[in-house]
Image (cartoon, rainbow over all chains, first blue to last red; front, side, top):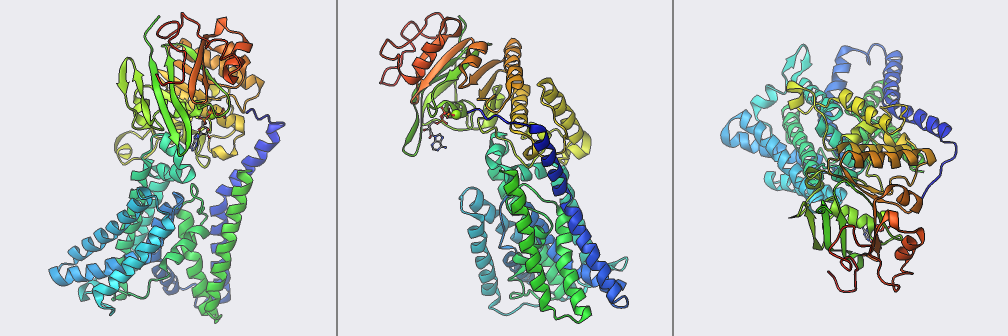
Length: 330
Length: 274
Ligand SMILES: Nc1ncnc2c1ncn2[C@@H]1O[C@H](COP(=O)(O)OP(=O)(O)OP(=O)(O)O)[C@@H](O)[C@H]1O
Ligand SMILES: [Mg+2]
């Protein structure tokens, strides 16, 4: 039963060095993003680095950022949420219907948020209490929510209420779309909450060692339900905002949202094994694919390359993470 | 002889087809150090998990201060002043020592921030540092996650955590398994210190020297049952080993009177439960 260790000091120092490296992971991906921005700006100073184009970049990323932030929480608990795109669409549909019935945009927003929350809580209950793997649960609710949205709309995209599309959809503050401000504010709050609050701490603890968290007195099931609920709620908000931005419910436009969100989270340094990750990393992870796509477009590189490059980066990020885990657990 | 602080009666616990505990008893008096010994698989860790609220028995009673209790969760056992160093340590490897130390009872900032759930990391770090230093666990960095610590340091963090929070009972499931000679001695000293402060300690160990050195009494588990109890001062190493392996079983189930219990033959566990 007794394990004796010989020469622990050097081992310990090397391990500490690695810990610092891991902390630097966010810095590394931030550097990659900066390099991309610099290269594209240098190659096409007149078109890439214009404020109009940068604003485009940010607008494209904003709604995905909400999904990815919720996904960050979920993945840190060592879970996954494949349902976000379906929940987004379903929420957009129910919001449209609610506005139709009540004539109130506020009722529409509330409906979207509550619908998203309900799907998220369903995910959470099935994962935590039903002990069904998150991959299966959320694959199931992805199908249910997408199918449900098609049933509700009869397969035809609904148009957003006009005052929503022309109001919130076009509104700007300090020259930046209001939608971007909203997404940025929510992301910032959740980033701080993850890093600084007890809720965030328990999220990391569960992903790191759920049994230890339970024995430490953390209400693991309740917490998991809340985390999935949060991811669903954010998908609901995203549904309402995308309705405002694009003017339609987009029933068939969101089937790969989940993969985009997961890619962003993982590229941003969050571990699929749980316990490790930051919202800041996710923000950078959202922007890298967006910048690539935009840059390729402007350079005249065929845009399909973006998918190839992002796929490769994703695999590389997971490989590095796995290597670090293996070394740690040796 | 004082009334038991904590008692287990006829605890049964099965995992599928494996009967980990088959109606075991256990007694802990106030302010004593009891060594719980037995071969691998005897059921020691299972008993500790049940008495610390992290698992529930199939049948059997847990009695604290003469009152029958049911620990539905770890928190309920904690509320009764019971803390545990688990054999697997139950640390979150990705979190800092301080985060582990305060897991489930985080300190929050004062005022509005605290009400929003904002952590007071500085205070938690300082108190963790203090507790670890008292135990001689030297941590190079408070920020580095537990995964970067050596096995001994991790064990030190787990021991310091349990000892700091315990008000009445500390269970220590092989707390010195990964420790060097010096650190082991520190933990043994710590156990005496904890006892002197009025907190009872249950030590699980395979090291009979340590058991002899630090315990007041010994309870022996074999195949999921308590088979013998001794007063440490009056028992030989051979008797302990004999009771664990069953070699001396036929020579009369060993019970030294005068310690706890219900009489000379009280703790002699026969085949029938209770
Ligand atoms: N979670 C579990 N699932 C299945 N079987 C278990 C579980 N926990 C314990 N057991 C079984 O229960 C029995 C007692 O295990 P326990 O860990 O309590 O023994 P122990 O006395 O602590 O042994 P050791 O000295 O090796 O730590 C063993 O046969 C073990 O295989
Ligand atoms: Mg054990």
